[in-house]
Length: 94
Image (cartoon, rainbow, N blue to C red; front, side, top):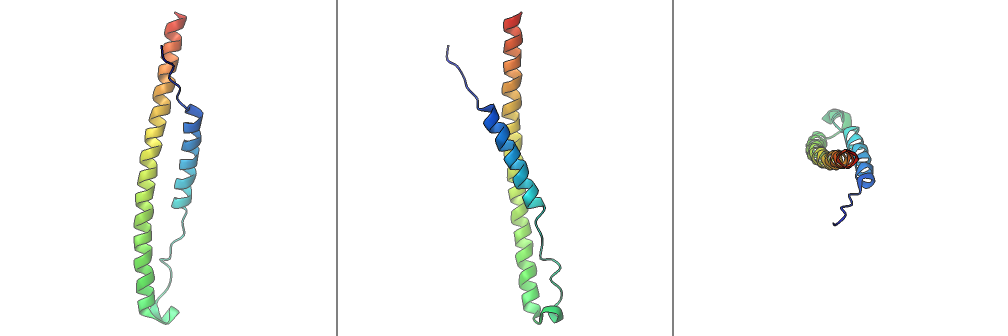
């Protein structure tokens, strides 16, 4: 019988890293408070910064969604294999 080895600890470390990545993205600072054209001397600069910030925020949201999807998948693998391992252990003990 072949032995299946699942790197559970590696997956748990990956989950911790994903949580850190998500937290860093979530805590990003925005440029939305750049001010007005009169504050910086050029209204086109304000528009460009706001446009960039909007695109930047959209990119961050997509990355967060991808991190969440990967985290959920990795957690599912950990949960399923730990549950299966426990069930097999209990079956062998009875």
